[in-house]
Length: 161
Image (cartoon, rainbow, N blue to C red; front, side, top):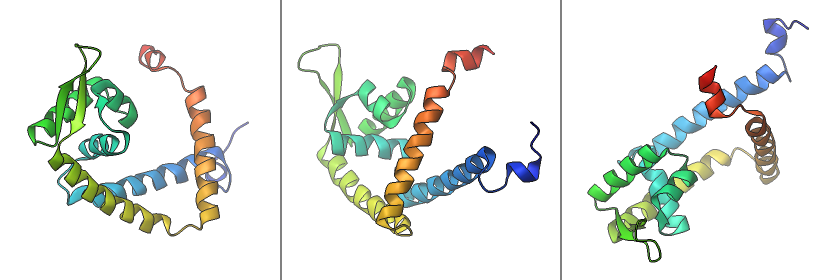
């Protein structure tokens, strides 16, 4: 079956769904970045501090999994935040090889303020949707996201081809 460009970008085609989703994601990401721009935190630093604020002290590798950063990127982010006095590494109580990352008083103060402002900005954006629309959007995004994740090639296969 051959689909021409006009058909592929019409109403409910998979290509149209992807295009609308991609454009919306780009716009929302830009909005979110502007939301934290005045804080002088980059996106990865904000994500690390936010994870520590809401999850408590965590090992470096667990922070990386939660905020979707590679081990190298999370190490650089934690080093940068430690250099700014916003986090500190402490020895793990049960594993001498492991280090746990904690917010400092300054880090907690900063991320509490920045997160509150960011949450308000995200609420202003989401206010375009009713509660029912929000619930539907979340359900549908999870549905398509899980489908994409379940059918994606493993990363190693992608690089081999």
